[in-house]
Length: 187
Length: 288
Image (cartoon, rainbow over all chains, first blue to last red):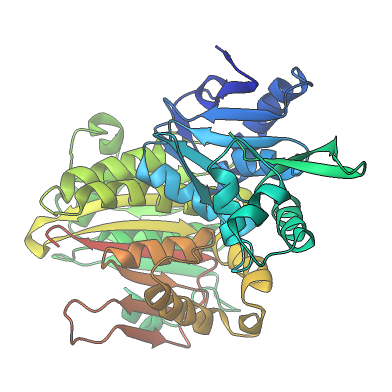
């Protein structure tokens, strides 16, 4: 059952699986195809929440072939985050899979975001934390918080976070007449 | 088991056409030895050698135990058994009836047993229930065996089945899980993964590699767990499991420290008789 939630789209991973156990590469690839189908069926949507409700077990290979691969494939274009991730082992395996593939995966619980897998560099960490606290952000807003930081520098940090898969971005017209980017957290 | 095979000479060696395994009265077999013998015997039969297993005590002894574990269900048909191959499979009759064991299961790409990692993890959950870390251990166990077995499916490249089994030894305060692969599955997953994560390790022999992983697994506390054997080994060691890994000509036993001042140990054996594949035994304490 897929539900529209604002501009986010919820996909239940369990519905794409035969039972609650996600095991291995082969099964992972089959489930990936079903997830892909869901994504392609909603072309206007750019952020997807994947619910882990009902997924009792998932190994690293399965997480890698499904969740991480999905995020990796659409990196910079669409974002995928995880919700209802309660099981500690499933989370640990998602973390390992994300780290192995170098693809960050945002997890939401109790309104707070956590990023699994690769972590932002020293220089971009604060920018990411700033971005995660609000649905959308511009480099100019971050500069207000960090005196001494130039707009160009702030833009670079957010651009890097976008390239690495931590954030999404959209083009918009800047007040000055040029192009400005609006960065959004995933989820 | 190794001493006996070694004393007899190398069964996979050239000029060997007949091999007999004799189990004298009073012999007892641990599950990991049983699974390795089964792998070896099937390998020898596969190379068209004539193989015999002689159980001096008949069903009353080791043969009865092996029958209960499903040994004969997976034994190559051509292998002769004395006094006589059991008429019925005790494993088939009693399967699942004993919470302290998981009968030998085959690992074969064409016959995926979706419940196998779950059965092994659940048995650990029951057997080690007294441990304070039992919840974490059960979850970790599922991942360990799911990963290992999936690697045997994915990479094995052999027509010989992989095998897995579990046995509790309450008097020894331990539980042993054996996973056997007669092909390339387990070790093969290690090296490509290493090429990206730790390229300086790719020149090491398989045995040195395992010891190095052991060392890394202990020092990094699971920060870089990778997949397949590396991840499984690191995860198991977090729970103070002993690991016994048999490679084609070598064997390594990895024993994590139990106390604050005891060292972690790796025991390496070289020049062993050829046994194809990788055979792992995990030993978990029933009480941490």
